[in-house]
Amino acid sequence: MRRLFPFKILNLLSYQVFAWLPEAVQFYQDERLQDAPIKSLIESEILANLKAKKMLLVESINGSSYAIAYTAALESSLDDTAIIRRFGLLPGNTQVPKDDANVEKGTLIIYVFDNKTHEVIWRSAAQVSVEFDMATAQRKERVQRVIAEIFQTFPRQKTAE
Image (cartoon, rainbow, N blue to C red; front, side):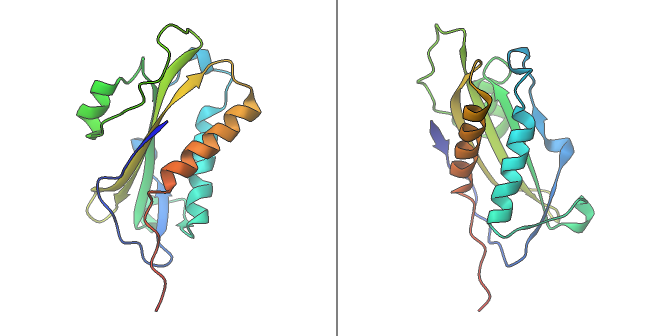
């Protein structure tokens, strides 16, 4: 797995308030993963990582300072060229076997918007080999690990002095 680093660092103060920006979430479904709860796993792990960073989560975007969203897709739905064009990120996981029908490259990009400026102020991404026949418990552990690695680039909030 190759992690892509954020393009801009934001300064987070204590008790920053976040909300989902559902219209910016792009989850590309694939029939080969129809029985795997990928979307709910991704969303629960993003929330868990925000909470671990001591961020306050609210239901309404109107009551938040920041909005968070993500894009998750297999290469057949969103290839590297499209990722570069749309997100300005250079993917780099080239170690996915091309001749194995049970494996395809997958990309997860997480981004944060400033609700005042409507600009993306942080984003980070990871690419992994997605195995279609992976056991649910193993898939959950992998999603947890990948999202935790993405959030390593998430700026730490400042402590009160």
